[in-house]
Length: 90
Image (cartoon, rainbow, N blue to C red; front, side, top):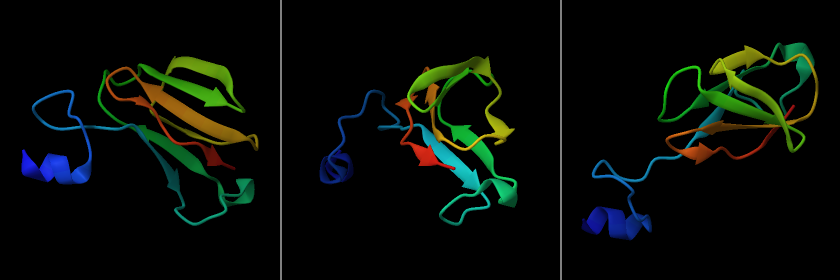
């Protein structure tokens, strides 16, 4: 377990610590609506059990893991197995 100790994580399972990641496509920053931005929530948990947040408010519950952004705002997603992602501004 020295590798995990070096990483500074306390694993919740034998596979090690996992986190929810919010992926942006296309991957450059800043993400802007006219680039047809797609957000994808990656993490453990049941596919389709993703909860989405927009501007700090619960926006979609149990929705798909990815979608095309049509409104600007700050987005986060939550997966039951790995928790809340970091925010992404579009």
